[in-house]
Image (tube, rainbow, N blue to C red; front, side, top):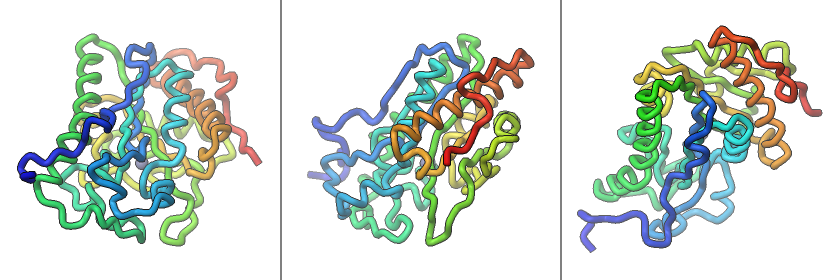
Length: 274
Ligand SMILES: [Zn+2]
């Protein structure tokens, strides 16, 4: 078959975008770029062992579970990507050299080597574009309806990277507009957590997509939240962090709106689980 019409997804592959509560009442609008670890049938295993697909190189462990639970608690819309970031990283511009990783941490991704421009384009067209087009369309609908929106992108990070132990429990990431992230940081203050501002990564136009494009360019409040994976790898951990983050988001939201801070109740100042 000619590469010019290279197709990525087949009849048995699901649509890449998983949507929850699009008509939810919350001002919070959630995204999860690295939620899934599916591979389209046409890519086989990408040359990886099944165990590699359990690792952080394939997806953000625990992130989908946390995002879904926050969505449920806050009645907040959530847009998730079902395919592995090894197919195409939906939080990087497609022009980035690491958009389709040929090496991730120390693992070679053989199925990503030597791709033709048509194969690259198929990944953009069939996975990246539908995901971001949907986020853009939903945010545009909200703008036209005059609905205030805070964009919150949920991620998780590996506790050890290239042999180095990472000290943070949670990272709050932003670039040009620190406003909402700092309110969230203030809400976390006094808790027993190590909070990284722009850790373990920082946000830039070159290395990131969701925050620069959907948050900054639209001029809406935003934050990217990174939770350490060992804290959210179990359902109990996901429950605990979703409850905590939901409470913190509500506090930050209320303070931003100059209104009453809701009784934090279940989501109040975090206590560390031993
Ligand atoms: Zn991520």
